[in-house]
Amino acid sequence: MTEAAIDVPGLTGTTYALVNLGCKVNRVESDGFERLLQRTGFRPVEDGVPASLVVVNTCTVTGEAEKKTRKAVRQALRSHPGALVMVTGCAAAISPEVFSLMDGRVQVVPKAEADLFLGKLSAVSGHKAASAVAPAEGLAGAFDGPAELSRTRRGVKVQDGCNNACTYCIVHVARGKATSRPADEVLRDSLALAEGGAGEVVLSGINLGSYDWEGMKLADLLLRLLAATEGQSVRFRISSIEPMDVDDALVELLANSDGRVCRHLHLPLQSGSSKVLGEMERPYCADEFLHLVERLYRACPTLSLSTDIIAGFPGETEAEFQETLEMARACRFSKIHAFPYSQREGTPAAVRADQVAPEVKTARARQLRQLAAQLRREDFARRIGTEELAVVEEPGRACTESYYEIAVPQGLNPGELAKTTIPATFLA
Image (cartoon, rainbow, N blue to C red; front, side):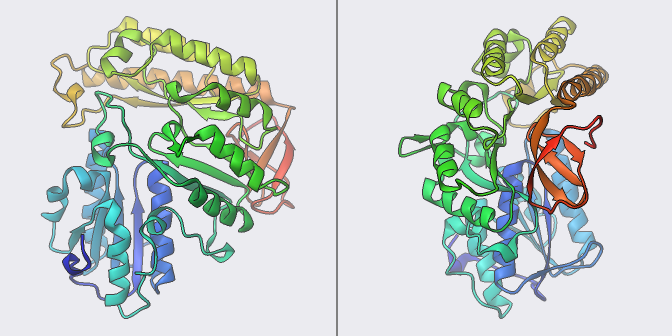
């Protein structure tokens, strides 16, 4: 999108609202939109107050996510009469016409061109243009300093895109091939966050484990971040990583970094049945996943493992679902995100004739959530009385290394990393 091609109809002021949907990468990108807008004179509105600009960062990972996205755009049009509504993100990339036809106030903007569009808005509104901001900075970086920081656990996008093609997923189409951000940019942003008071920096990506910048892998990047922040009160967390991307170097780093890289991994399983995994085109079988988990626990006995599991994938039998339940128990997950399978138009799984009945999918997802709650209680019980570093998110509340929200003394400051004895109960 060239500057001449950018149209900004209906912009009537310099207030904005932002609606973020979907994954942690979207959250980091939305933070980038906010920084860009605020640097150029736009100011956020309170909930319920109409804005002159609404940015909707969309998600399309499932059919249900697509429905929520459309609802969010319609709600933005209703709640902000007269506002320009910028729609970007994965759903906008897959089905731009769906949103552009909703209303003349909707402007569909590809994610890679969002910074240019927002910069143009600032010029039209009569404020300082953002054209000096480099493209990579608008979405993923360019932290100007402590004054911009409001949360104590902050994300840095280090990777985008995906080279896998799971049969239930369309994100690889929306995001394109895997790319990695330059290590110097990641380091710059991480240092800015640490200096601004963030006690935890979360490395985020669509397929984070595929990070490869000039031969530097994810573990190498983390080692560089640890060296650059030596002596500072900040730790790093891996947001999510695919099982096949966990290499020996990363396992060693988790085991030996003394909590500066959180001993917690979000390791998507999706199914405990090798047959179902094969039909999903996941690049591992159930035994390989379990062997990885066992290797991780041997190296890191206090490791906390969370996961994603889909219930009712097409063709899944009751016996195969029971394999998933058994695998979850064997892995001792500390948290499970359980989803009933949702048909996503444009994916191979969506056109299969052997769709599982909706009531069966719902029942299986309910069983998974019940098991998830039990496993979470059991994992936390094993931690009671032990010590972990926790980052204070607000007075009286902190997030542990193992990813539990717990109560802490009121005197601790937000952003502070405090050695904490795990109490008898957790908050979330």
